[in-house]
Image (spheres, rainbow, N blue to C red):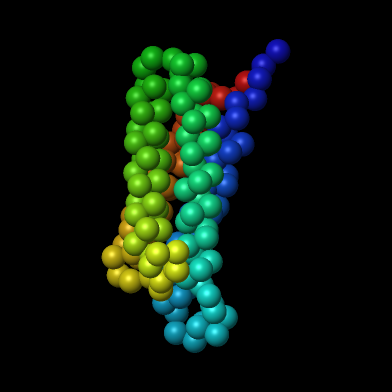
Length: 142
């Protein structure tokens, strides 16, 4: 009997929250959208915070799967996947902390937007590597 690994089920939450946080930040730059984005900085802060919190169980579940990865190319790509996702976590965590004044969210500045963009790039690279692990190396498919 095969078992379903927990990691793939949990990763959707941080991926969605972080991606939506970047989208809200980007939308806040579009002229004329301001009336529709009242409180947008609160939304992006909440999305980045939720993404960071949900990333912790996802990462822990991934670490529990690590002993099942065979030596060789799959393990090397697993380490690259982990590095990309830890980079994304650090960048989005930095974006979150930079966008807060105490617990009050601030509109994103240039550096915060840069952190979010770099975080999204790391997230995309890590997601692509995760997909390779599943579909190319057949990791975690039972």
